[in-house]
Image 1 (cartoon, protein in one colour):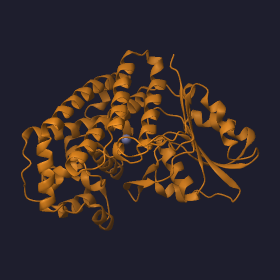
Image 2 (tube, protein in one colour):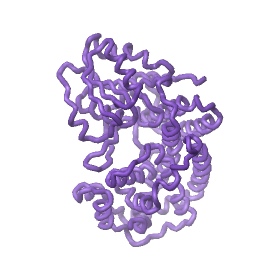
Image 3 (tube, rainbow, N blue to C red):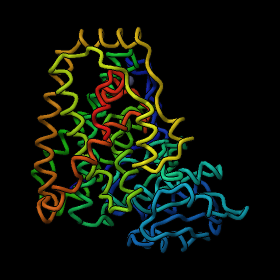
Image 4 (cartoon, rainbow, N blue to C red):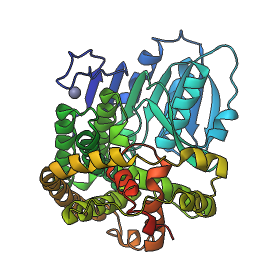
Length: 426
Ligand SMILES: [Zn+2]
């Protein structure tokens, strides 16, 4: 059987990269029976009989378990939605009385994002109960929310306490696949991080890179060999570990690869067209491979010469027409041109380490291909319905708009600046 893991707050010495990779969440418990410790953790913030704001997903069985436990000793003002969507408008509906001293939440990634943002807005600490293996976003100090149709990332505080009871996870092929996809797809973000370091001198941490790679490869190996019943807990533990690693990194680099840029565009496109969007990690598995293929094509061709500069007017129009983004917001999001001189310097740096980057990219692609094979087997239908889910035209448009919906510098951003992405926008 799987063993649980727990991580207490620890201040680390400065890393070789110059940062202190501190864990900010005081207590992280992922184990069979972890929800049994809920009262002990709440007692650090609130006397018995005190009042909490309880944000939860009514469609999630484990959230009812948490509610039963919670209301045994505390009063709860409830905010509940079935299949909660991480929309900023929802948070405006949350009203609390003065005697509420703590936010407790239970659910998957969307509930976590709503709760993190709400707690930050109310200035209250957050005790988070994770109920899903499908997200790696629980512990980050940010919330991804839709605001007027735009997918945006907001800074928040991380949860003060995180509990995930592995006995409460549902053994569901889709959730397993999504969690597995969330973890494995970070290879693309890892590459983009290194690319940004080489191309523009961004800070980079070899220790974090190593830890992330080990975590991903370890999960792939374990999921392939584990009995089916052990998968939900295995995947949940890796997803939470990754989430903790991202918290300790202290920046959003592992959440901001080119794959994530494409994901933001894709999620907005599906939302705009009211099409059923698969879980984030399911999409990520597909999109991260697409990004890696595009990067390989760029670096293998070695052609970093200049095309005509990117057409930002074309982007402004496409964001309005296909994603439904108003001109004001689109105008603010579209990334300005990098100067010719700066682009020349970047291209020079990229050319210098091209072989090194290619070497790494080919390894990452191999790992991802292997992961994709296992990923499909996690579904009951062996991934049959996953094929043909996103059309080539949708994907093409989202690649073209990707660097302008999420502003981090990635390999895709560089490709846009070279004028290589315009042809993807119909
Ligand atoms: Zn470091």
